[in-house]
Length: 154
Image (cartoon, rainbow, N blue to C red; front, side, top):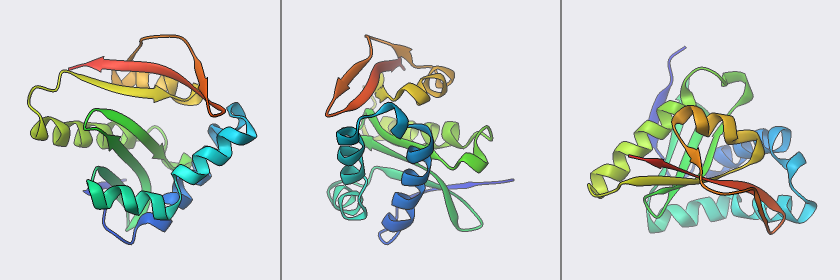
């Protein structure tokens, strides 16, 4: 099944939030505290997603038949802040396609970019390892959110 990766378009934020929430609730939320989950839900609210894109469009979606099945958001042109793929589409190269598209865009904006970073949730660590990221520290917890700092040398 083919998927198409495109930059975010205003108006998609509600569908993006639903996708993130669905995947997060199943795979990530159990590792976070109630405060961590609430902090995260606030971060992914449709309004906050749209506001971040007004400043700097740095979000890409993967669609199949116009349904958003994956998304990635980049902070500071070098940090993955969100990467989610619908459970029904895991293992089909969507996360890798989203990452490579975002990376290409980031390199086009800054040719001197030499590293990419992520704070990986416990569930996502194997995904980031397959993409080429290496752990750079120990598991942390902030605002009830557990993460492992990881980076990739370009």
